[in-house]
Image 1 (cartoon, rainbow, N blue to C red):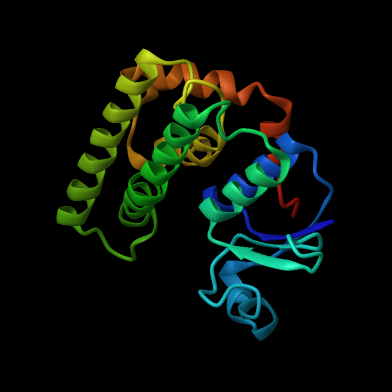
Image 2: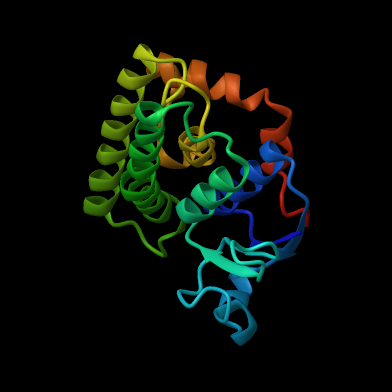
Length: 206
C-alpha cells in the first residue's frame, strides 16, 4: 500500500495520475497547504522541504517502508516499481527523463510564477507579469514543436506527459490560448480522455 500526501495542485496531481495509471493501491492524505499543513512535524518527517506531494511506500526495496518526495522522483520511483511509463528502450527512457526534467525545471517553475503574478499577487507587478507570461508562451512553443513531431513527449505516453498535463490544464491562469498551439491542444485533449487521468485530477476529493 502507498500513502499519498497531496493537495489540489498540478504537482500533487502528477502523483495521483501516475498512481491511477499504474493501478497501485493507495490511500490519500489531504495536506491543506492553505492552512499550513505542510509545515506540521508529522509531514516534515516525510518531506523535509515541506512541499506536496510525498508518498510513503510500505514496500520499499529492502522490505521496509520508504518515503519519497519531489514529484519527479515519485514518478520515477513508481515507473521503476511497475516497469511502466518510462520508455520501452534506453532511447525512449532517456527521452522521458529529459522531458520530465524539462517540466520540473521549466514548465513547473515558470508556469507557477505566471500563476502567482497573474492571479494571486496582492498587487499587480507589470514587469513580473510580462516576464513570466512571455516565458510561459515560449515554453508552450517548445512543447508545440515537440508534439508536432511525436504523439507524446517521449514518443509513447510516459511520466513526462503525466507531469506536464496538470500544468497545461491551468493554461488560462498563464494567459495562454491553447488554440494558438494546435499540437499541444491535440495532446491535451487526448490525455484528458484517459479515465486514469480524469480520476487522478480529482484527487484529493474535498
